[in-house]
Image (tube, rainbow, N blue to C red; front, side, top):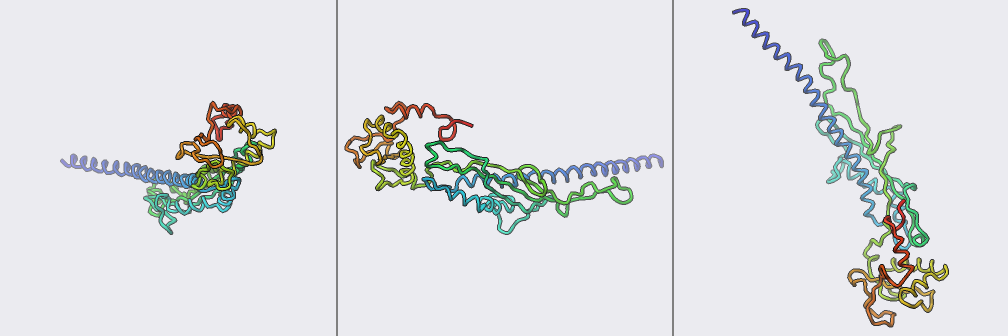
Length: 318
């Protein structure tokens, strides 16, 4: 009987020992799993902050046609996109940032010092053609980088049975103090060199004023001065070369302007079904479409239309 009782006690002690050894492995895997998951999540937020600055810039007003792109230059030089993204993601959550909160503490990981920096990049470009160069300007692109510092919190178990008598390890198993994180790439020389780039400005008529219509006139009372002046610049540039603009007008409407130095334009949009309905300088009382479209009387227009490529502004893809 005495020997049997000793065997049962020995078995109970073996189970306790196995549980202790199992917990040693389980707790280590659990703690490090949570910590590394938080590091991965916060690193994605650092990346998101940089890309957010890029997309926010695409919605900003960047030009005043014709050929005034100073708004975009000022926007990048003052790094407004980077400052805006830095403030929005100060708490690593771009949905509803809390003012004054620049440090986030999760279960085993803390994050702080998120900063987004944007700069002009001349290598991102889209050269203009002979026609578009009279109105548009190749303003290049912008690149944004971001960085932050992650570190384990005070309650993170930095040592676990790794010191003292009966320790399992001779040295601490986790000695990292902080982890610098970049939105793209790794830290080199204390800085984040990798960034995301984008070509800015769609060269479009983007404001309400630039979407207004013009009836047939010489620009004296056009509600869309930006469009009128842009088209006039292209007309003047081509008219000076062998009278190309005069031939274009003759082929489309059947007659060239009496005074080729005077520019007449009609712009009607969807609200007018692309038709000019007013007698504002034209003796023809009938409605007529302001856009010739494919298959028109103009060989110049048909030739240009057939040469359109699939990239921006119908140009050839790089």
